[in-house]
Image (tube, rainbow, N blue to C red; front, side):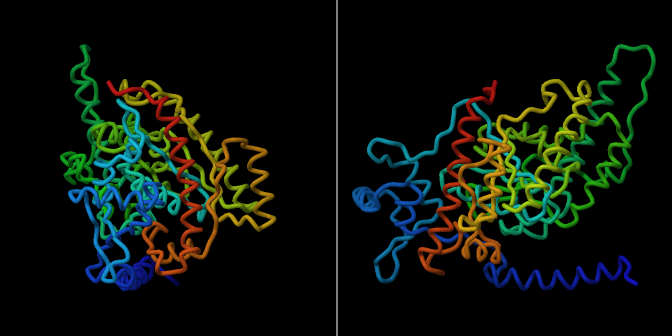
Length: 434
């Protein structure tokens, strides 16, 4: 017989192993650090300019970052901060190296969601965030998944639940209840209306006074921040059900949108949500806050079947929650929920696999041009990156054959560039900030 005590003991043993694994994966201080990028990568893969041209321009202006020179003097290596300074200050053929971003628009918000486990949600979120950062964008990632894969891959662990999505939702409940009570007190009515009361177990946690920035943690990528998750955040589904009982009028599904709306519109360019493998309180918060919906799926029949179920159940959930119209504060949410774009992205795709090609054809026949043209291919380098809690962009190409590394990176580059192009089209449809 096994009780909760046995499970707790198993977790304690596993946590010790987690610490050992992080020591092998990250630095001796158990902190993840970002490698430097070679002048070849900076020129051809990041800025997409001739390497000799870039070298010549840097040599002509010694005030520009010159990178770190290897002992043999054959290659220079640049930090992300140096790359971004070069990007800001240098033009090639009179063209800016800065990424495209429409004026007077807030950050685009993209939910990467599918309730099929192993569909590649965290892998896609991690790689798109890193690719966007190398492209010059400022990125905020939000980890809605209690498994915290994205958080761990970003080098963040030992996060308490108060500083996760759960903390944001609980803080929103407190503030929204307070707002409703104040509105009730100010109502022009002769009869005293009842006040909504929350238990001290919620109000006494100090969440009400937490600042917006308290939930946002920096990562080893200087232009990527993260609202992390943790294993304890798994109870948010149970807690949220309790919170709704305490205040049935609380629009729980708008909590994350209200939080993001309070962040300065120019703080980030892109917000990426890594959603849990379920349709629940957390995933619905992500969906309602998102401008775009990206649905990754493996190339097998069962993944196709699960994806079909996912969009059906998501449709029903969105229809049900649209009934909250009138309970949400004016200006915070438009109902029914509408996305600027919806895309399906095949992951772990093998072009030489006949079944994979057949399933890709099935996806295209059903979803048409909603299916991303460029799939994420399954390669040995991709497997290795997952094993070391890193993206292909973080792995040094010298750790394997350059061809193996470049093939994997090429797959993610193509998928990201299509992702970015879709974002730019949707961005123009986004309302201007007042």
